[in-house]
Image (cartoon, rainbow over all chains, first blue to last red; front, side, top):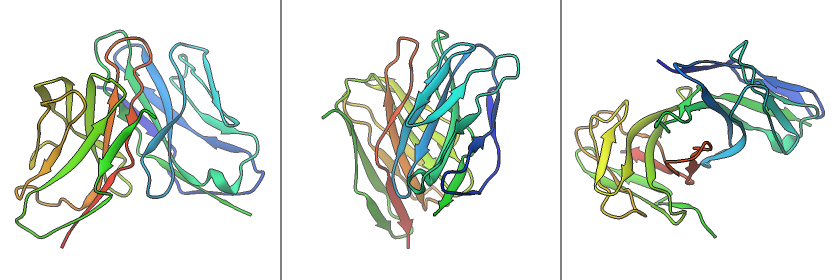
Length: 114
Length: 114
């Protein structure tokens, strides 16, 4: 079956530090990959996405590259801000196979301190 | 503005009562989903619907029921058979064709059983 594994949190960083949240996946096909962000008490927002190998998704200073050879989609940001404190979810869906269900990782909580 | 609305934001229920959570979308999406979120467990799929008048069980459907009488609406009923209903419930919707099958989420309903 399909699965997503994220690094366990919580992660605590100082403002302007470099962020990496690891995400690896297993899938019976060629998935699309997503990062979602959830701020306290809110729903999930799509942060970035990629649909094929070597695609780089980017948004709000966050980046992630679809690495088929290592089945990974690690999230990075060069300089985090207090406002980036949230829970981050990696997810996959199988595109082009009639399936559009998302499989989520368990989430990684990020806290950024001034 | 297009989006997904959920109501109420907070809901309190006595044991033995059924409650219904509302989800409405104006994105013209065919597919809609219900997830349950518990601390440290990520998101788990309860039910999903690909088309009006049709829906399928997800991973944790026991104790829940849904209906899909209109494209825009996908209400979730938490029945008295659900053993531990206290959780955060998220509704989502998506297209069912094209490579980008990302899901769009509502703001969530927090259900507490008293």
